[in-house]
Image (cartoon, rainbow, N blue to C red; front, top):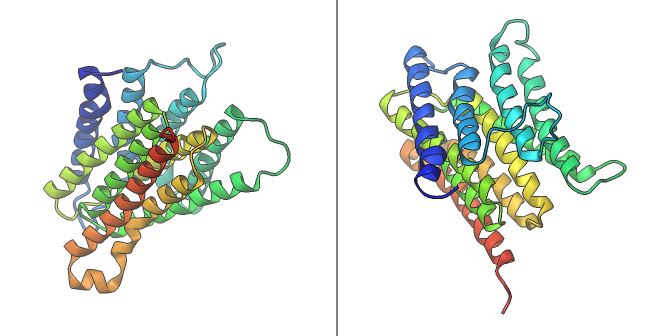
Length: 285
């Protein structure tokens, strides 16, 4: 979809949803530390993603219908499930193992569905197993970072990584996936604004869950369509990059400078991945 509808469903509506949800949750979580519950982040980015998908393409068939779901439709329902199950992460019943089980489930499912959509493989897929561990590790580390670093530096770093990833998917001829990843970037842009309005607030960890499921599935799907290996390695580096802002010497020098380093560590690898994906698709002279 192009034109005003693409801007509305792909940018404006996701940003508005994320801004309202995060602003309300940040004001309710005022305190020390002001860490919103996971459901807030899952709703903020997840609802925007669902609206973008339905508005830019179509509402997918229900999982229990007779229609066969394509890979992106399965991702749609995984995002919906991640939102619905997010409240369980804060319950005392699952306090010890709930987070790890939740992350493991939604790190494995996208890999399973993307693998099923590609060429059938037999035997142990070591590369696929490694990719699941990579997504799990980055996801858990970002949630930990979200709980310890208040302010806009983390959401703006993740915004940079998401924008670069969307450009990479577009260069890899995955236009629709680029648009819906762009909707996540719009939501993160709203998160930056909320962090500036509500001082000391943290990015809700549930937002990281939506990023991991959607971007993990999108990048894995792009690999099927000949995305160069160096590109997905750079994307992984981009989402691990915000941790560079935690170097003690940088934070002692200036929190703003540390935030700038975190942003550049996220944005530059993702932008490089986009450029390399474009170069790989460009016709040779």
